Amino acid sequence: MIFGWFGRKSAHKEKPTAKEDTSSMANARIIDGKAVAAQVRADIAAKVAALKSANGFTPGLAVVLVGEDPASKVYVRNKGAQTKEVGMNSIEHKLPAETSEADILALVDSLNKDPAINGILVQLPLPKHVDAEKVLNAIDPGKDVDGFHPVNVGRLWIGEAALAPCTPTGSVILAKSVQENLSGMNAVIIGRSNIVGKPMAALLLRENCTVTIAHSRTKDIASVVRGADLVIAAVGIAEFVKGDWIKPGAIVIDVGINRVEVPGGKAKLKGDVAYDEAAAIASAITPVPGGVGPMTIACLLKNTLQAAQMQHRLAITA
Ligand code: GUN
Image (cartoon, rainbow, N blue to C red; front, side):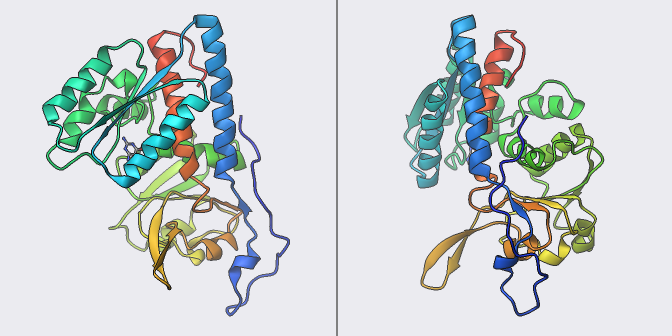
């Protein structure tokens, strides 16, 4: 179990006055996503080594990148490096932007049939001429390490063994690093996307939370969030969640990564939560960057190990 990778705890406890800079007043523990992710990877590396010696095979993750999107290239490079770092095989298929949908589907089909490939990830976004849903739904659900396939979505909701989406999985691990038992907590998720908000609700239900999903049509969202012991912000709007929406002592997990222009023409990454304000009131909070972000690839590796174990009918330890 993952406990206690907290960063600094501020010595300042005074309540800020209206004019003061709240950044130096943070009461909250800063949840160190980099440290938790490193621990998850170390755990996976040990299990991969055990799998190799006991069962004689190495899990393999195939990543398909179509086109030249700069952010996608960085993600794919990081995925490849971290896959190798935990002792798994990384197989990258880099295809030109003009690759036809039929050719991508044919590649997915061959990866589905390849016993050396345990996990398949098709990097999004795909070029406009490709039907992304069709491609994602063509991945064998047992190799769907993104957890996006409708079979995995259904399995997750009915409580069967499923490959669950990586960002929500990582967010729950971070919340549990503060408080191992989330049972009975009022969890409010802000955002209802298929990739984060909805699977997060399923995962938190599994943890016996009372779950609310708030979204753009929610009435008086501030008062809904004020009832939350656990706030998960996944709305994609910089600093949408204000400090005075946070219940004192709540745990705040910020999934947002928003690039915001700052004076001087530079860009800064901001979360979905007004961090300084919220950190003065919450008991624990994830920073952006360095919170949820590093957990996504760690959980992708966890899913790849889980997929390999399921395919070989081994006990799931991932
Ligand atoms: N592009 C950005 N994030 C992701 C992700 O988590 N999965 C896939 N398939 N593509 C992405």
